[in-house]
Image 1 (cartoon, rainbow, N blue to C red):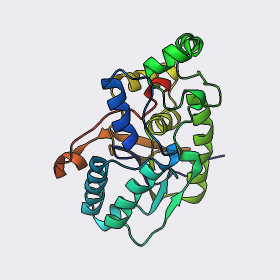
Image 2: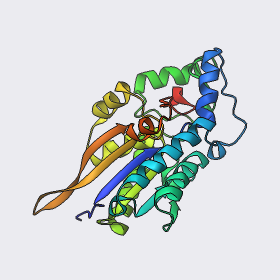
Image 3: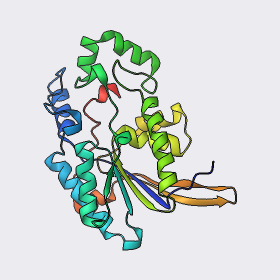
Image 4: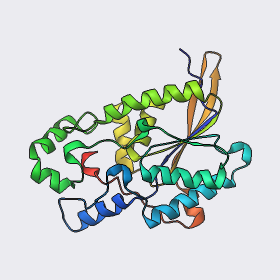
Length: 251
């Protein structure tokens, strides 16, 4: 079945979260645990993350009205919803934000809230298993592999194709979500996407943008226009942060 893509698709990682800050603190202190009391779904933006989200909103608002988002889809996690809300308030207040649980953060199961050191000391057999399998296929007990995330994102793309053809769609999610969308949209393989991941972390509030490319009569594709685009933050003087999400060791 032919897919009918949006005319433009933006995929954005949320602003810096309190979890990102807690993770950095844990690593700096050589700790095994990441000190976050809230459920992962309830972890808020940090003060800097709020500044980044506001800057992103102003950047979208600076676009001509005919180039701004017509649809906003967001992970239900608070840090993503807050980022989406900042863009919504600044540039598209007349539309609704649609929360979609398929866009949620990767689930880390038994390794939740542990640093790399914590995993190695408390679950050495899992650390070894992950090293053997590679993080693309490794699934921690009670958690997800990258492939599991990709499976649910396939259905997101089907929904976008069905409901929002020729629309301008903004998706706000998480670091692994951004990378897994690239894997799907660009038809990459394990080596290619892990090379992209190794080259640089997905920056908080960075923009990945695709535009509809009418290549031939047989169909259309989405063409990557920019990845990890940071101009929205730099133009507003908002500091750029690239810390992985709190459970980086389990990515």
